[in-house]
Image: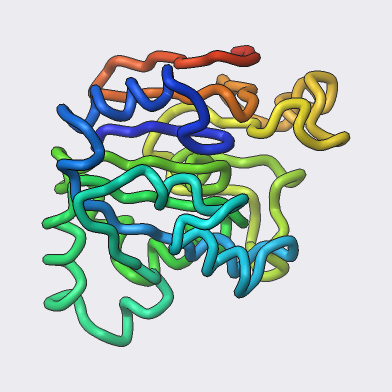
Length: 220
């Protein structure tokens, strides 16, 4: 897959241009599926934030409001009950998956339970756009600081990419660079610390930081 891993979404022209580059054209020519599943696992999220994410209403609906050719909803927790013969074609036909934030371990659980995690290697032309947990779920580990789901066995996630992500730099009082450095001591491997004006673009072996804000790479 082609990945656009963000902290706060498509928040500035540079990130928007990176998205268009991965899509090979404007959002108005692309079909998208919104995945809000991670929100159900986080105590700060709920029915209102999930609705806003899907409808494109602020402050949670930035990805849905990018003027897509078509926009649908993909709720991962429902997929095991409808069968792969129905939902796999929906995913294969989409140009982009818009994966919202929340709890990355909860999202990881439902990606595995639904079968979406197993499908990812086949989606070579699909663009994955993640916000916060929607980006972190593709990393090897998120660190215990970011585990909010009580049933999470540990902080491990899918490991699609080989680096971790510390999002929302300086957005919350506990998301300072000092907090990130302490967090990184418990992460085995490199980690990007990014603010909400920063994204990481992954296209094959090419990894590029796209930023109009602040970021750092912490290496072990």
